[in-house]
Image (cartoon, rainbow, N blue to C red; front, side, top):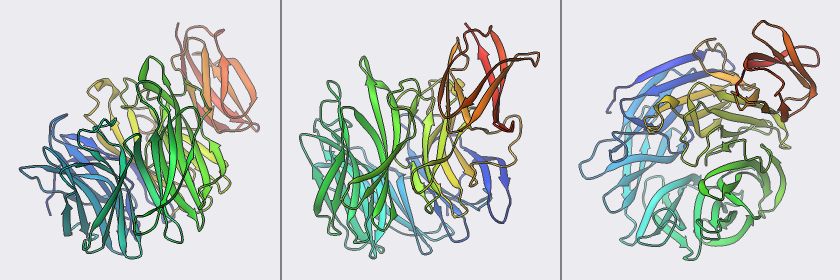
Length: 507
C-alpha cells in the first residue's frame, strides 16, 4: 500500500454511542478535487472516501486517493493509486460496498483517449484486483455517473460521444452502459447516441423488477442560441435494451439531476431548473426541486426548495446531492452564494442541507460555511439519522486561482448540528440567511423557519427594528437604517432564540 503525506485538521469530532458529528479539512500540496462522489459506509460505520489530487492545474497529473475514517472522523488508513508514465488514473465519482469488498471506478487518461478502470479493495484498502476497459478508436469516454449492483452484476453508467462530433463538451452526446460481474469477467458495454441532441447522463437506479431507471439531461437546442434542456428518464432491462422514456419539460433549462430508489415502486428525483442570463450563458441561477415518481416514470409529488425564478438566490447543486436512509430521513444538498457554473467566486459561500419527510415536507433547512468557499460534491444519509457531506473547499481570497482546493468532510446529526464547534474560526451553521450582506437597504431572508420574529440591534445594543409573525422566505426594506453594523436575533413565539448574526449597512 502506498501512503501519501497530507495534513488533516479536525475541527471537531463528537464521540457518542448514538450520533456523531465532525468537520474535517484535508489539505495536500496539490489541488484537491472531488468528482461528485458519495462515501461508502461499512457495518462498523467507517467511511471510505475517494477523491483526486491534481499536481498542477491545468496540465498536471491526477492522483486518485482513498481515505478511511471511523465514525468519529478519525483517520484510519489511506491509499494512493500508482503513478504511471504514459497516463494517470483518477477516481471518477462512483463507488460501491458489497459485503466486505469495495468497488471503485477510475478514469485512465491517455493523450488521445480515456479508458475505464475497475478496482476492488478489501476494507483495509488493499487492492485485490483491477481491470482496464478499452472502448474503441472512435468512441470517447468522458466520465461516470452511476454504479449499481444487481443480481451479482455491476452496472456502470457513463457519458460518451464520437470523436470530432459537434457536441457541447468535447462532443459528448450520449450514454454508455458497462456490465460486468464481481470478478471483472464477461464485461460488455452498449451506448446510445442521438446525433441531433446532446444527452448527459447523471445517475441511475433500478426497480424491484430490475429495470434500470436513468436520469439524463436532454439538450434540445443550440446552447448558444436558444438553450432548452429537459430531465429525461429512460428505462432499460438488465441486458441494457431500452424499454421506455419520459421527461420533465417546460420552457427553461435543467441542470444536474439525481435519482434514488425510495420504496419498492417509488423514486426520488432531484432537479435544478435555471434561466440563463441573455448576455452571459454562464451566469445563471438554479431553482431546486425534489420529485417523487413511480415506476411508470409519472410525477406523483414535488417540492421546490427555492423560489422559482428568483434570480438573486444564487443557488446551484451537484449530481450526487440526494440521498435517504428511511422515510423521514431524506436529504438534499445544494450550494448557496456561488454565481457561476464553474463555482468560481471571490466571497464566502454556503452549503444548503434540507431534510424532508416521506411527504416531501421540509423538516429543517440549514446552511453551513460562510467562512470560505464551500462547494458540495456529494452526500450520504447515515444510519444514525444524520448525513455526511463531501465538499471542495478553498479560500476566496485566492480568487481566481480556485483550483487550489482542499477536501472538507462535514458529518451532521439528525438535527443538522455539528456539536462542539469552536465559537471562533470554526464552521458556521445557520437556520436563516440574510443577504446581500453588506446591504444598501433591501435584504432577502431565506429560511424554512415558521412563526418567527427578527430583531435588529445597533452597536450600542439598542433595539432599532423588529419584524414579527414571519414564516419562510421574506423580502425586507431596511433602507431606514443608517450605515453601520447591526446584530440581529431570530426568536420564536415564546422568545426562544433560533438564530443570530450580523448585518452591515453600507451605501
